[in-house]
Image (cartoon, rainbow, N blue to C red; front, side, top):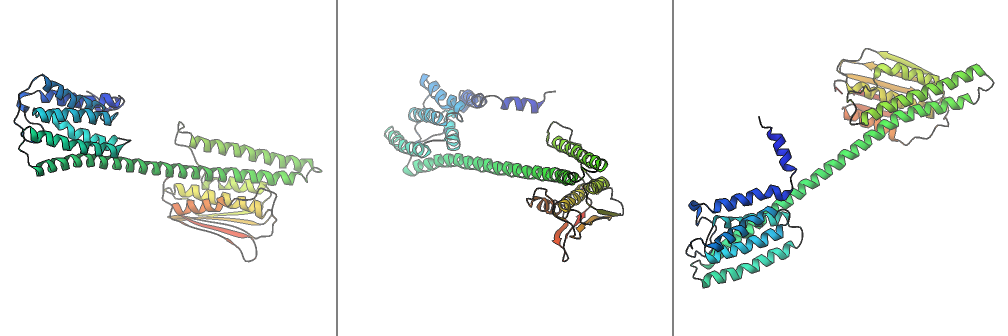
Length: 384
């Protein structure tokens, strides 16, 4: 069995001249068939002339240049036009004269420079052709020449339309590619922010606390061990993220889920943040990407708690319903701001985008008595 897809793919790899040549050769061969004598385009209605040696030259001029109709459309149009003029003056009316329309369409579609000059030159050349045919005894009336000229204009217009359509499609694909790249860059930036900011903030807080424990070696060792463990988790999460970005890697890369919230809360506690954690219900089997988004909401909220309310009592509540996951993280505002790097505002904006993408609700507000609260209602049932 012939693999047509493979044959077509191999054919497309050939140079455009090679791919266009068979059409011109086929038209030349067909023009030599006796049954098609006098079946070509006619202007002026001169009496049909039998074939002679010049007729073969005319056929070659009209057909063979079609091989370069996309590579050198101006050359193709000039040679085909010359053959067409000879064909009409000598009244061969070979089938190959139909190539004039093909050459005009190709020129309108592929000619890059001097397009207006080419159109004006061809229009000006048509007048001497009509005068010459009339002097040779053509019976065509003026309106016949006008109709034929409009036919040539139509062929050129079809080529121009194809050109504009191709350009519009290229522009559309460019916009799609640019939008895809922008979305991908945004996604990467959001993932890096979630992973790096949380771990680095925890490490900074732990390192700051360790500075005051030099007189207590046991507690200092515990604090430094916590920094080390946080760094290792940061490296692990970054490797997992890089695996996702690697196109050659297995696409089935496990992403964080609500099942890892206990580990996340414990890590935050070891950084010195008093966190109360409560869960209600169990995640639905079809929760899918809702679990991942819920995890990111808790992670970013705890990162902000470490930054802006260090030491403040923090509450994390997660409730699993049949069709949604509700997350609430709040602080009471009794803590202090740490020396961790300031935020860029990308974290909460990224959370809102994630939740909105699943059709959920998100809010982040300050409390009247101090502190802040983040709430997210995330629809479950969007498999990742």
